[in-house]
Image 1 (tube, rainbow, N blue to C red):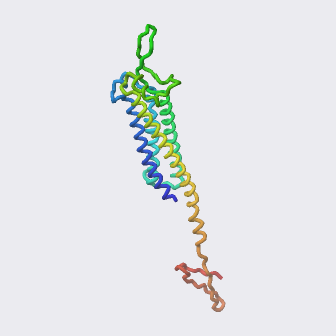
Image 2 (cartoon, rainbow, N blue to C red):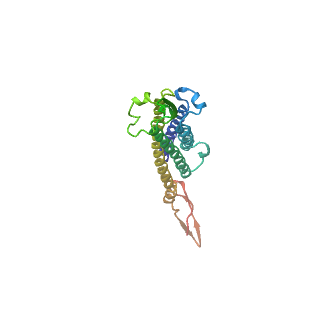
Length: 245
C-alpha cells in the first residue's frame, strides 16, 4: 500500500508542476496585451492581472508543493531516510499549501471574468461629444453579459486591440488550470491520508509477526548418577536448544 501511495505521489507531483507552469504563463501573457510592452510600461494593465495570482499562488506555491510531493514519492533529498509517517505528514502539508494557492487563483480569475477587461472605451460627455477613458466598461452592465454577447467584444473596447478576447482567453485558462489543481490536490490529500493510515499500522505489524513466530526452546535432561547433565541440541530450523531441568 505504501508503494502504491508513493507512485501516486510521483504522478500527482509532476501533474501539479506542469499546471503551475501553465498558470504562470497565462498570467504573464496578461501583462502584455496583444504582445505589446507599451501598456505595461504606461501602467494600463487591469488590477486583476497585476495581482499576479497565477504567478505567486497558482504558480510558485503550487510548484513548490509539487516539488515536495515528487521528492516524497521518489524518496529523494531530505526525504530519503524519513519514515513513512513523517513523509506522508509532509505530503499533507504540501497539499494544503497547493490547495491554498489554487483556491486564490480560482477566486481571482472568477472575479476577473465577471468584471471584464480593463480597456479604453467611449463615454458620453456634457457637450454631446464622445470622450474616451480607461476602465471596466462591462462592470456596470446588469442587463447584458459580455461573455455571451460577442457583439460587445469588438464594439466597446477601443484599446488594446482584441482586449476582450485576450482577457477571456487567459483568465479562462487560469480558471480551468486552478480547477484542475484543486482536483489534483484533493486526490493527493486523500492519497496522503491513506498512506499515513496504512504506514501507521504497517509499522506495528512486524512486531506482532515476530512475537508470533518466536520458537520456544525445548528442554532435555538426562540423569547420570547423582549429577544431571544438560544436553544441547539443534531444533527445527537449526535453532540451538538449551534444555532446562
